[in-house]
Image (cartoon, rainbow, N blue to C red; front, side, top):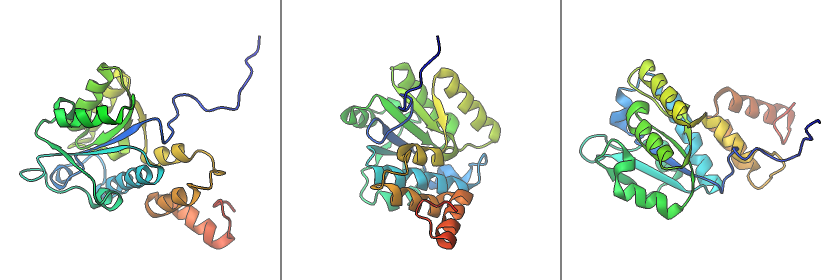
Length: 219
């Protein structure tokens, strides 16, 4: 008996209204010793997430750790997207142990969470493992995370995947939210974010749009 295909997306694909995004500790002090990814690339990836969440109206929580006494200010890519963001500052390295952050998560009321942060093995790993254990579906944007060494980053990602987290990339997140170029209400938003922060893909879109005057960015 053959399987009959149905034109519908997998349940595990993300949509703008089915999850919350948590951006964890993208701060100056945490970035100084991040060696697993180039900081310029990291900032661009975080920008993709922040601007995608803003444009697609995804509920977003921004967290910091001891921002006034230790880790310092947020990346400007986050505050550019969310200039009036209410930051959940805390002292615990595992944000899931912070009552204020948990109140924010419960207020949003989403069972599916997308997380990333600095460092991967500490301030990202802790909330991911804790949320998974409490029954949440968790996605980790691995290229918007970073750690002191490649080894530390990779082992943390493996640990989270072994616990049930689903890995993805920042550009993949943006395109998964759009998913259909016929969705014209977010078409320009998606293309503009990709052109500004999406590396070679964004350059290709800009080239095609300029040279061939193609609305969908294809020659």
